[in-house]
Length: 136
Image (cartoon, rainbow, N blue to C red; front, side, top):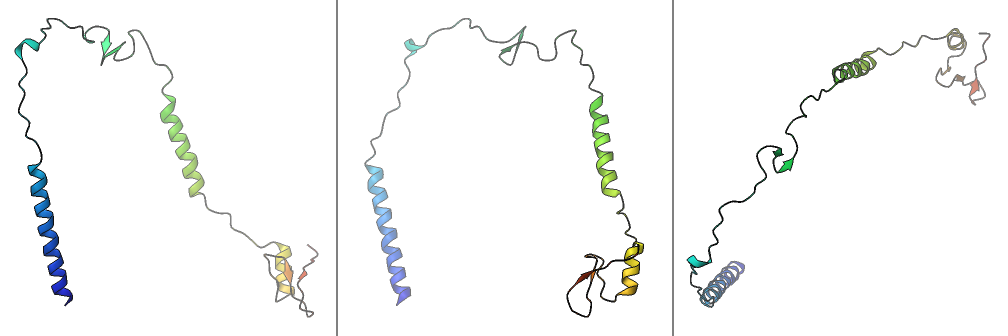
């Protein structure tokens, strides 16, 4: 039943759209082609354009630096880039410092089984963490 109703509605919609477009196309008035009159043409012999000496793409000035102009001190760019790269590369490639246990940590670890070097505490028999106090 659904297939029949879908097919019927699609067919009705298609016919409706087809007929309305045909009637709308017939309502458009046809305009004739208007040819320009030969007497409306204005003859121009010369027109100033921005080109030639002193003009570059429509602007006054020079295309490059003016004659006699010298750029000084542009040699530091590659050196600065190399220096920045060396600093960043050296910082990234540097190994982390190995952490050797201090004498204090070694003494506390040998004395208390529950010693935690991160917090420098241990758990005594009472169950509350206490700070390790060593002779070092």
